[in-house]
Image (cartoon, rainbow, N blue to C red; front, side, top):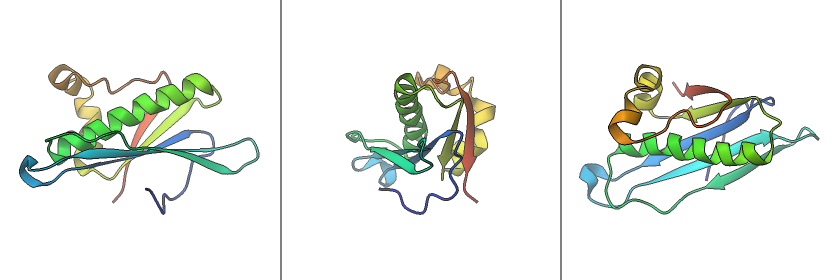
Length: 128
């Protein structure tokens, strides 16, 4: 699903997210998540997750959903392995990256989304 992820923070759980949608909500939409971490031997490991799609959604809705699902998966992962004190979320969505900190108290009220699910430090990273 994901290739060329770039530099991985060895001390963090790295969460790569992507949302997709067809224009004007005409067809299915979906998200893809890839959790990447470095094990005790220093090797990268990963786990991919692509839940069933939605009937209709905008690209911005799917990019937010991708981050939300990514945080839910990170929370599940961290409940099993408590060795990471930081979560880095990577998104290629300008909308998410530009608006995350401004909207982290607004989005949950409007959409029911819980953005800060993990008790770890969270950083949203974008791609130029």
